[in-house]
Length: 289
Length: 313
Image 1: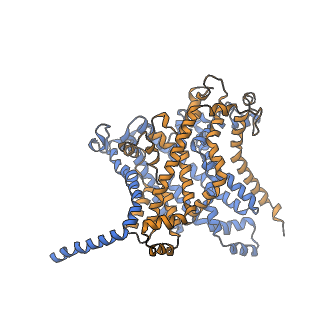
Image 2: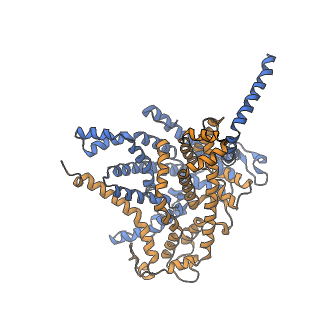
Image 3: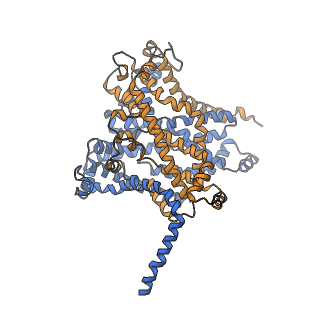
């Protein structure tokens, strides 16, 4: 018997997997290192993945800027409110659709599935949002994307896996369908609620297209729009100094990396803890399609 | 005759009434969802009549004048038409060609890893970029590729190449975009295949062992056939999405210097429709592409049903 540990296959595949890990992690480590290094080393391009001349100046600059805090607050509002609304509408809809005794279930399902393949597109949707006076309001951020068809189908699959007997026992105790949903289904589906909530929250946190289309006033802008204005648009217009720096001459690169880190940190910190829920949710969606 | 007509509505009525009573609560639960789909998904579809009208801000959709196919003709006769179609199509095709097999390879490699801890580390790390926003990914790409102090140009400089102004070279955009897409989503997309892999009967591997099959042979004869339904379904979905390249990232990564290859239908729609306010024209282009996409997914599904008996519907 050959030892599997030394076979070519193992050597090559381990090498490829290590490359995947390095290529994925290195960019983040590099950004962190540059943002924590002193100007001299950044200018000389000698920073790799370990900070040289450690200092927190860039973070002081970024966190001292009021725009960042306004954007943070907006993003939090959109994420919390949006996730809540999405979760309520999706879970109630998914539960109704999961019940085989619901009349017109097939028609409703068809109505929903059709939207996966065909949509009105960017402009007619904008016209609808505008005619409802949602442009430049918090509601314009949270309502137009409230339900993701994919998440709805995922939740319906979760719910239809719950044994019918539990519902029947609730009915014997005199609950109606809404009571069964609130008292029996919701407590039984905490894991699925958590998964879907996480999907919606990440989507909302990262959303860029809705604010681009539906927001006008800068004091409503979320983090992603601010980030784009500072990091991407800023590089085209203002040369070496970005607007956060004010009059100070700052290394544009470190400042931008610090801004990116500040806005990504919440996800990077929460990610290891919630990662397994994401995966579980996606797995169930994958297996049952 | 008359009796029938008289009797039918009555039976109908009691039927409806009974259904209503039985389903009241369920329909009530479904109501918010229904309203959402009617308002934000179906109303825009009816709003597509603007593509046959000369949309006037003050008259609104319904009172604006009919213009028939004017805007469709305008788009097809536009000198930008073919370049845009080509860019959209090629970008989608590149992404399909390189982006589709990547997660399958990764999933197979992960499946062969014997050390559970190593497997878990690789998985956890590779999922991460999926949760980073497009704004940040685009920022990272542009900054790393910057000719002044960008990470990639520093590395190239160390081996005596460069500096290359990557984001101003139209010829490089597609490659950069597709690579960044693979970087961002490869890990996450392995999940569907890893799920399919867990469903393969371990006895098949044991039987292959008995027959003296090597690792590669087992992958070829057991693993791949085991996940082929998942591969086919994902392939159909991806073919259907060839023309629906995510707007956000292309929009964030492009700049006028590389419009030759980086301008696609959705970013063009945004520019003429939303920025220049030409709603009818923009919406027409969008609908035109939507119909082509629909034909794509329908054809892919049809072929798959014929060839492999796996299909979406």
